[in-house]
Image (cartoon, rainbow, N blue to C red; front, side, top):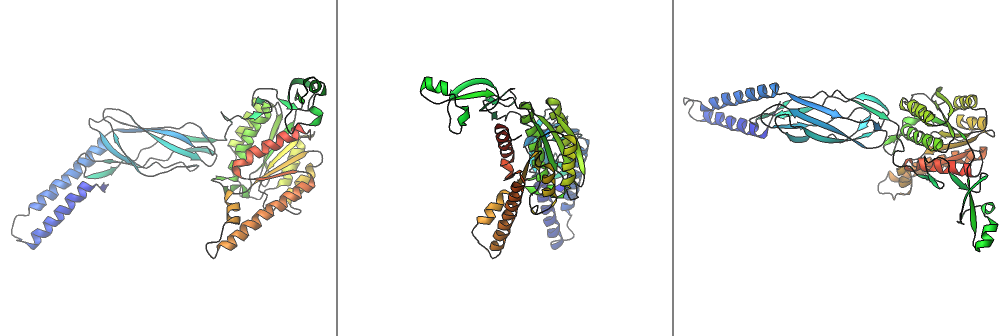
Length: 431
């Protein structure tokens, strides 16, 4: 227990009364001792009342999406006849972040619920029990706070993110609407529209242009079906946190959402995860079943403490896919220039397959590189950030020379950049 302000005040007054009695007439009756006995009895009564009160606490936590803030609800009830003043400090599970400041509330009497919303941000995949809730109850007399921790029989499940209501437009139709239209490819005419800057010259319908005296573009149905292999680096470097989430967390979210985009275009999509050896091998599949398999595999993925063997991942992809496909590799590009395992894996894929290699750069790296020096250490920090950026660009240049498509981007732009490159390669019929 801990003393409330009222209890501290009574204790201080009794202490002063005892000191005054010792300094005054010692033969006088020590009335302060009666006050001390009454205070002790008050504390005992509060302890007994708090102990016998039936306080029920429950938590409602829906499945959480990795990296996306969500709300859970704490519900408090008790069957006493008078309201209770409680103070609690929610502690998140190990794979979530939240503000855990202490909060005070008044709990109504007679089983009337008190609900409190808790904002969570999952930062790691997995399932974990919610830890006991630190809680204390203020005594009926307001003399002290009495500990009464609450056990929450709730498991919090963190799964990869999903498109949900954030579906973007692909071509002329939203994702998930079935067939899509692209200008200048395919064989079956879909419709005609006014020419837009960037349309291929071969897509212009010259007969319709002659009739209307303005450029008209043919839009045809896309009849291309691709196989896409997602390769995720789950090795040691993937535990590095970038913009509030580990690199592996960013990779998992991009792969889960990319799979939804791919099957919406009727493409096949598969998955390989790798650390010191391949961890997951899923052959390309089509439809909702393929997305479910990929999401289940990603949900159980965790960072390994070993170095990543990308050559083993390249061989696993070659065993799963015999025909030409698009390979999307998500890995850390720092220190990968030269003749390392990354370059060897690209040589195994090219020219039969089309590899796209995406890596992350922290948002504050460019800020540190350009920031004006304020302290003596700032120039060295700026040089380190510039060297880091130059190393990434050297790796990207080496990948480009080998025939792959490298992407270096911030975490917030990773998904959009990967999808943009995927659409461009389909439109140009590179795969």
